[in-house]
Image 1 (cartoon, rainbow, N blue to C red):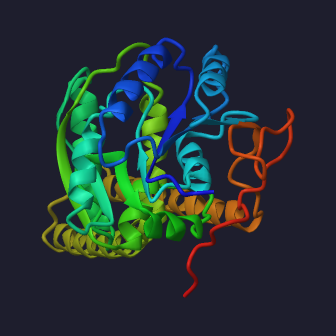
Image 2: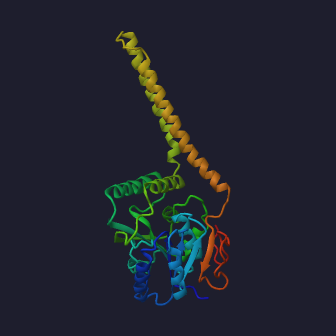
Image 3: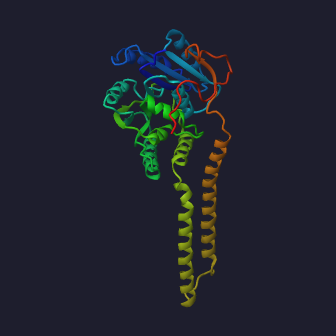
Length: 339
């Protein structure tokens, strides 16, 4: 079977209000890309939606065979959904974009033009972020710059998961199977020639964000701990700082004692400050160590990254599967290049 020129990977979670408009926008875009023609596919990943998203996507797949659907057995998360799409996408070029239409499908045409210049990864950089609060914009900007400074990986600033990747990049990513996934960091880590396309991020077409503050915080922790050991080095810095404070406190107490400057309750303030500082430092480092040890524990269990309950339109070898059939995390076919 001939490989399509373009694959779109679209994770979906509770987007029943957006799916009809997404279907319309995709149809208009895919009909208007002359370099692709009819040689394309769209891989939807239903991440355990609780609304009618799965049924709507299934109806779309019945109407259009180039629409394909992977339905998870439960919610495994946005990054696992992207991974599943990359595992099954067959195109020469693979684009990851969200179903909420904040990443306009029309920008993909500009990415295709950039790909013609010899780049392997073309990522979207947001000039404006419409429909988002000042707090979210400020924390997102701070996070991108923090993780870039803490890691040795050139993760693009103000760029999400919206990007186009060549077949070589996708095959390389398939070999990276860590549990706590930070896909945009993994794409930066694998290297290859990368370039940016700038666009204005639109407000959500409908519904509400699937990334509240708690998920944003977990995502940030996954990103930092996946690509940096700087938090572990905080122990050394805190140890040096605590030692410096102890020396300064000792000198101060010596001066007070020698010159009889006196205090209301001798030693009380020093002891309380030292105990509080040491106790907080120990708790902080215990928590950081726990994060890394927990990730080691998750990795050694070697559980699959996701479980698929149903698949539609993947052809005879990988056809629609009965309910609750487990799909292994790795598939036959193309294999990632080995070093």
